[in-house]
Image 1 (cartoon, rainbow, N blue to C red):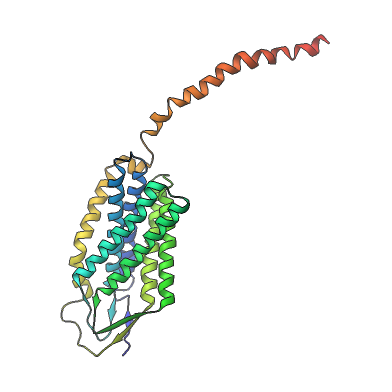
Image 2 (cartoon, rainbow, N blue to C red):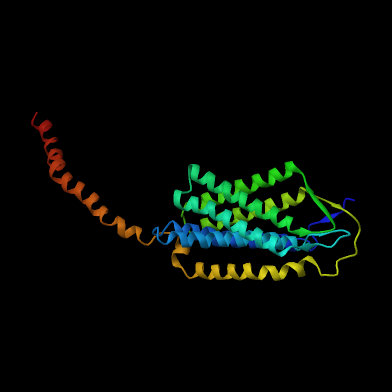
Length: 285
């Protein structure tokens, strides 16, 4: 028996909160990626790892906040703990691979395409692995074409977000990248949910174990606390807001006077007398 699926049990509340969580994780992660491009290689892995964990936690939190508004008629929904947290680990690892590629190879060309593709696949893998951890009295099937569209959305938007983060053009630029990342996650999520069909094996009484919100809320405490800590790190690092390297002016200063001063020393003795002599020859004629 095919059942009715409702993804908006609380109206627009869960989609909006889910989108904000995806933007928060994206903003923190992409700012860490930008910061990694402004420091020496010894500090870069730490910033990239923090960015990977922030983005992974953000998209995972977004998914399960959205799932709080998900319900299926005539059957209770349960969540497998190990599988649910395995989806978090997969998200962090795969997003980390993509971010490390861009962080070390630059946000352009093959490196950007590869990093964006891996990051997008990480977002999609987290979603479908999280859905695999959902148990009910029936089975889930997916429309193949719609699943492919959801994965393409994730890869395209993740690539655009990593490109924007790699430009290192200040805080507002990274905010725009975070909004794109938020669209990648939420767009992929609800497109993937549109591909879902539920086939029940029988009828069951309404769940006595509590609603989806009551089941998922305890699982979200850890990732939310981590995002809060990551936010504190970002707020208290001035370079994260400025988006410009502190060491760059010091490295360029020695070259600037040498470059601008030398031409001046050559121009005055060589060209100035020539300019004074040329107007005199027509006057003598």
